[in-house]
Amino acid sequence: MTAPLGFMAGLLLLTLGGGVWVGFSLLSVGILSLEVFKNMKVDRFLAGDLWSSTTALELVTLPLFILMGEILFHTRLSENLFAGLAPFVRRLPGRLTHITVLGCTIFAAVSGSSAATTATVGRITLKELEARGYDRTLSAGALAGAGTMGLLIPPSIPLIVYGVLAEVSILDLFIAGVIPGLILAALFMSWIGLAASFRTGALPPREPSTSWGHKARALVKLLPVSVLIVFVLGSMYAGFASVTEAAAVGVLGGLVLAASEGQLSLTMLRKALGSTVRTCSMIGLILCGALFLSKAMARLAIPTDVAAAIQALELSPTLLILILMVFYLGLGCFLDGLSTIVMTLPVTLPLVLAAGFDPVWFGIFLIVTVEMAQITPPIGFNLFVIRGLTGMPLGRIAWAAAPFCLLMVGLVLLMVAFPGIVTWLPERLR
Image 1 (spheres, helix red, strand yellow):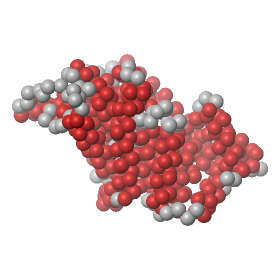
Image 2: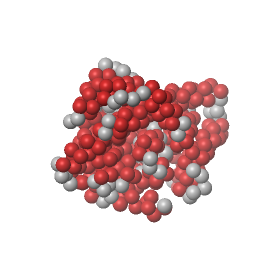
Image 3: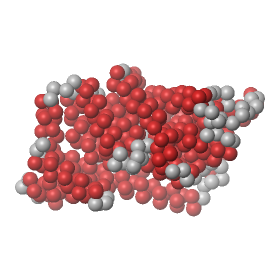
Image 4: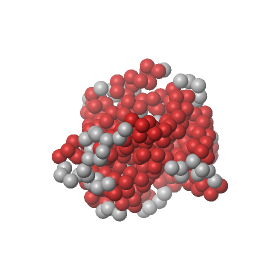
């Protein structure tokens, strides 16, 4: 380990362990490292780097997608999702528990936030399922796992951040996340059906079947959000709009949807805008710190030294990526996903590129491993969201979420064995 890398690692542990905000921690580590190991005018370098980082055109996408999700959070979307999906899953093994997975998959396509997806879908589905006699542990585990798809299904906020940091097409990343996201949803639903079949008392008595007329009326409840998804994602994939323009369309669609339900008001807009500003401020500070730290690392030749040291071990590409998966899982026990991405990318991205991996593939790999961190104690944020919704002990929720975390590990192994799962669709549409 080089002296600058050891200094940075120790300083990061000291500042993060001391409770310093992640963004300020990253900035201070970059500044002090350059002051100690490099004879240069750090203040000018910092000012120029912060300006270029915060004025990047790609970052306009972030507040727009976040605002769209916040607007939809204040509508009756979760109630409509439950009522619209219920008639179609009554006969599946696991029955209405599948609404959690399907609802999170649909809401993730208009949110991009794991926490917002978990909270919005969970506040209705958990109460409804418990009132109907469904097992609380299975329902909580399903929500914990399915809520993470807000990070993978486009428009994903962490994918936007990765695209900016790695200088990769955000649209390619969005397209690449579709197939893995659908596979993950299918794995979750398969496990729910299997667990419900073998767990005594997990399901209430079977409800009467619904008529086709009832199913048609249920579809009407899903129509508004379905149209919004088609407009937002379809406009990007068809080439009619850039990612930023599609985000603006999403905000307009969210406002129209809220107005059609009678939920649009100055109070609601004030809450949505305030929450968007807070979220964007947090992400912006972290991004500034991460981008400056990556530049400081480059000036100190840390990524080059680390890459040379790892290449000297002569690891196979597969072994390297499996080691990185364990590495990110370990970090996820103590750091949130976004911080993990921005702190490690300057070192890990050159390694995987040198090993021959596609940067788009690595972005999806990184997001899936970060998803696991959302349901890994002690920091897994989705666990805290569900505890706030249910009042269940954190350990019980983490135990219920464990099978879904293992399924995500299985998806990573599948992606390693068959990279085309990620890269086929972007290459086909490029």
